[in-house]
Image 1 (cartoon, rainbow, N blue to C red):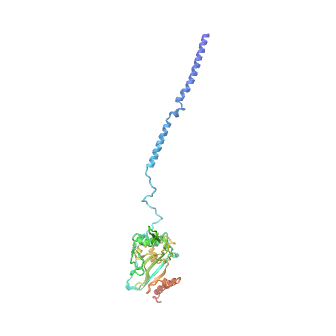
Image 2: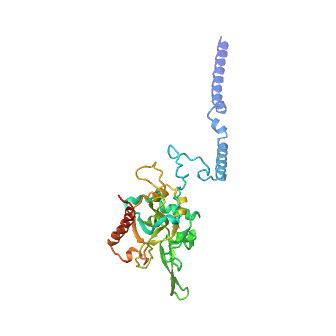
Image 3: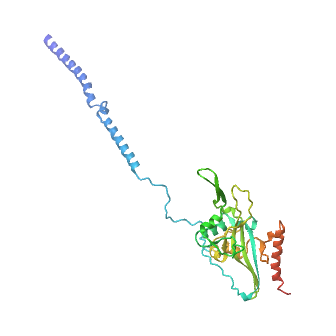
Length: 334
């Protein structure tokens, strides 16, 4: 009995010791296949350089890509600015004057008058939307019109007979204010002379126009009507460094019958109605401007300012204007 009991005790002791050794060995095996050492087993450190290299490659591609400027396309379909297309002015044609024979002219008088754009009735001619001077200057620059020098010569005493053509560059130079530039000797530093250099042209500086016209009475049609011959923008020269007060004078003359071909396609701004289709040719043909006479043909070839001063000039201009109207009225009998 004692032997059997000892054998049972020894078997239980062996089983207990075997169980203890198994428990100790099992935790040592788990880390090899567990999740604790999995991050260390994964090549995370090696993956980081791969990401850096891909970033470098992307940055390299961006810098090597061609730089495209933010420029609008050269050709595009511009939308219509409005609900209908204005084409009447652009396609306008000049209305010809009635033919006048020399044998039918029983009365003629040449008149020079000035249009002041500062007057309320004439302000639309200087509107920033449509300036008369811009239409003339653009046509001269494009070679559509010819400007003529207003300086008097032996054959052209008044300088308004269209005797000396000007190049577009010279015509533009006459419209700009002059600046007095001094010249000095490089060695001694002494002043050797000075010249006037033309500055930038400001269209708002043109506030007057002079027109030359003939008033003729055609007995064939029994009509006394004016025919404009020439138009000239007036400028007041300002010389820097000199206290000289110049009067307004023509910058150049333009032959008006030739200018009609250009002015008929240039729209004049109408403050009352945008749909009137009023061209600059209509302005002069319909006499939609306010002006005053500065000279009338006479034996002494004098302008009004030479024998009248101050407000008397306006009185004299109105007297001449009334004489022209009375001449036509005196033809009729009642």
